[in-house]
Each structure stands twice: as C-alpha cells, then as structure tokens.
Image 1 (cartoon, rainbow, N blue to C red):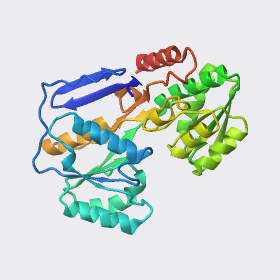
Image 2: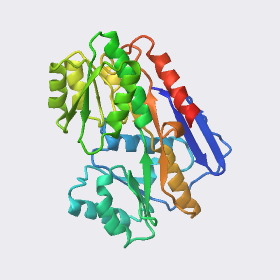
Image 3: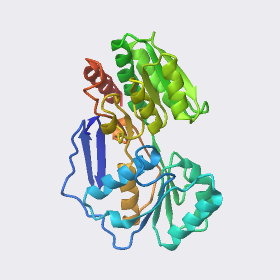
Image 4: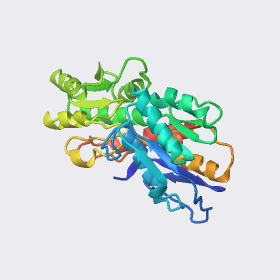
Length: 325
C-alpha cells in the first residue's frame, strides 16, 4: 500500500532528496555506504515477523534501508528477537552477544531497554547504540525521536468523518496509560476539526481485545489507539465496526472491510544517517523527525471504508502542516 501523505528524505553523501506523497525519488548519483566490516545488531521485543508494534516498524524501516541498494544489505543485520525489556539479565546477555559478534551499531526500537544499555555503553565506547525515544548520553548512545502526532491528527480527521457518515458520533480510543496522552490529544484535535460534538471515549490499559469490545458495546463505531495490537483489528472486524491502525500498515491488507488508515513510523532516515556517520567515522548525533521530514506519515486511505470527501479533508489539513513548517 502506497503512502497517501508522506515525505521521505534520504541523505547519502551530499545528496538530500525529498519525496512527497506516494513517490520515492532516490538519486543514483550518491556515495556507496558499503563498509566490509560493519555489523549491525537489532534487539526486538517481539518477533522479526511481527505483524504490528514497534518491532514491526523497526524491521520495516531496516528493509527500506537494505532495499535502497547502497551496500547495506540484510546480511549485515543480526536480529535478536523476543527480548523482554523488563528482564535485565536477558537484555545484558543479548548485548554481550552482539558486542562479541563485533557489532559497530546496535539498534533498539523500545526505550524500555535504555537503562540496561546505559550500563553497557560506558564499558564499550566504540559501539554505538541507537535508541528510540530516549535522550542519548552525548557519547555513544544516540537518540532517535519520532513525533507521530501530526499523522495522528490526520487520523482523527479520518475517524471523525467516518463516524459522521454513519450518523453515530461515538469513537473509542485505546491508550496504554494515562502518563503520556500526547498522541491521544492529537487524535482528539483531529476529531474536533471535523465535528467537536463527536464523543471520544478513552480506555486505558493493554488488554486490547477486552477494551475494544467494551468500547464497541458502549456504542463506538470507530476505534483508534496509541499502540498497535492485532486484537483491536480482530475485534473491530468481528463486530462490524471500523479501526485506525497505529505505527505500521501491516494490518491493512487483511482487514479491508474495517481498516480505515494508519499513522506510520518510518525510521529509515535515522538508520541511514547513523550508519553513514559510523562508516565515515564522523560524529553521530541525536536525531528527530515528524510528518514534515518523512519520519512519520499517514498511510493510504482505504477507499472501501473511508467516508466520501475524506481524501480532500486530509489533503487540506496536511497542506496546512507543511505551510507552517
């Protein structure tokens, strides 16, 4: 599925290429970043083949890197799957194995690993650790922070227009916790842009199936969330309501009768920048991005399910974002 609203920037050597909407324009006149010695470790909290969640977003972005054809192929990545970030002993063992494997870079897509990585990073200054949504340590732990909220705002517009079209102004939102509601609030702002009278009920916790079922029972006809769980998609499909994905678009093809759209993470640029800095032996810096830089985007809209006029409404809102950047 091609991205509907997307800017993908790829920086290789001195080339800066921007790709808007669904087209990716990669210049052939670039420097090959092949390095015969670089090995890259990847720590996943889920399976490499996970259909959703941050592991899926991480793997998808790595595949984007390898697909670009600049000498960084799949063989350079060593994955360690299903590593519980709450099991310090297991994390320490994995870090030791990747360092012994002579990885120059270790990528993690879960900030919960940070404390264990911090303990190891000081003892291994030659190894770089790329950690999502962290602060970094100013030395060899590099933060990559991806702000998905603008894409979530657009998702709120899609959800609200569907609820309006169904004449049932009730939407359910599943949030992991009450500690950080930045994503939820961005979604609410998108909904209010369409119709401030739509009621959005938030359910907290990670029992996605039970929460989704309760929201539907209470009258919600569209579901959205700040995390991705296949149970949300299954429950929506089983009860003939609609859902917005989160983080990746891997669920879109299997739920064509209930999927609306999804805000997407894209870590490709972060990974390329860091790999290139290591290959060139230049300074590795903390990285950040959002909708305007291509680090996040909105998936293609599902033409089978979205309300009439949704594309135009999302397009207009997206143009407003870019105009203010």
